[in-house]
Image (cartoon, rainbow, N blue to C red; front, top):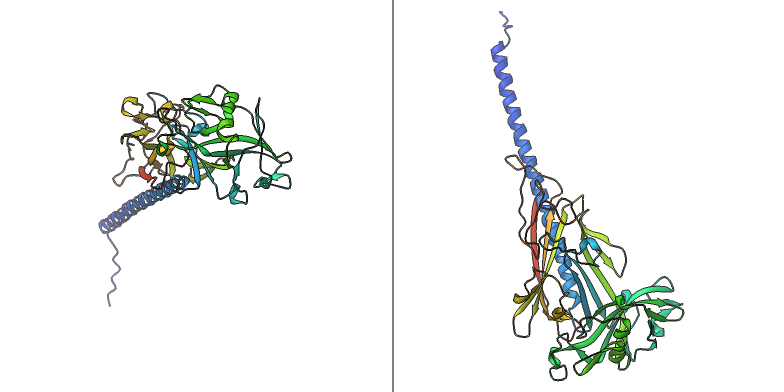
Length: 405
């Protein structure tokens, strides 16, 4: 029998190699396309999850701050104050506004510090010294073994909330609370005090320790003026005439501050004066690059005042609450708009190749975004990253006027 030992010709081998190479190239391109789609889907999912969970958390905190009677609240809103530890405004006219920062001051007359047995006390506030510092004798039931309940040392710095059971206040000096009590609230104030667990004395050192109040007084000239009071219309408003001489509520105030760390792109929280800690975003996940608040206040004539937007006083629009006409008007907040901008962790490649280019819409008072921010660092949006802007509106449905603004 004849045996055929003939092999592939060079042409046949070349054609086979070409076909195989074409198949491998196609498979590689398909794999790369699939990998790009996977990365895109994963980044989009991470962005959406981070944004939604952050919005839900902030909305819940704001809604709960004034959710029912018996809870008193105030807020500190700093337009573009994230990088300043919620202590000052960094907004600059004509430039981008950095992320906003907000502090919620709340106390519940049915609970004590950190939820412990530290009851709110009604009666006459006991003043032991009214000059040059204000010294108050705190209720003995607030202490255990020489320490304020909830504290680990005999010396502590806390916020004390006072709410009058008799006197009504309204920041609008044109309102007579005696004739129109429905337009007024119970007079309230929040003071930062140093507490000595041994003597049970709380010391308020200077005017900067007055953190919030709803008196119809724009500014006090000093701590002494705040203590002794200022005459406005037919009333005298100050610590001694409003709280110390008539029955008042006193308790410990809790705080929660929220800010965006622009370096790590994280939402951070600080509670009761402790250090800020991250709770969402970060360099290893979808990062939060902006947070903006807009507050909608109900005016007496039915119109709406907006706070957290570019200034236009003629149209009732203000960047923050520093305008004297807005003092104490947290009580008028009917809704709060929250905006969050989240950025992808990596720069995913488009399906057809190339990088993404994003445009972030005007949010709050950030009307436009440039390459350079006020701090001098690269601002958002940065080419190549995916951005998503989400928002929600918190309606203060149970926000009654008797609560402190």
